[in-house]
Image (tube, rainbow, N blue to C red; front, top):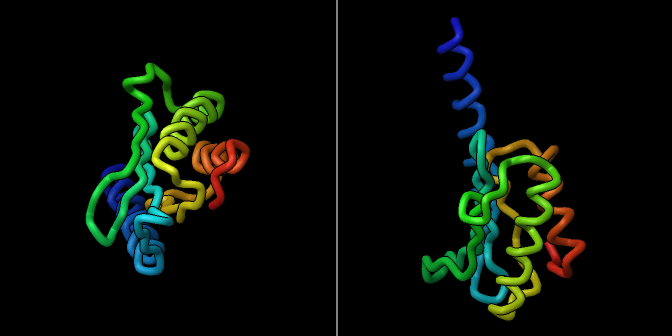
Length: 118
């Protein structure tokens, strides 16, 4: 019973991911910010889809920060610094199939607060 529930959740997340990703495309001036969250950590990267290159990234595991709302704000500050070093002020946000609430919304709001336009 439990495995069927998990399979359904994963299937629905993949459907959301494909639906969102079909409309989003990043380039060198306005890269796509893709996020990934596990149960413990939060990761984000800015991707230039025309070249297939990662322009900037942040890793919550390397920073020693777990996956909660307060720590994700700190992760977003580090990510905003690395984006500004790469002369990027506008990005396209790819929530990667995750629902826009909790740590995902906190990350996006913190990016906006640090001067990155979504």
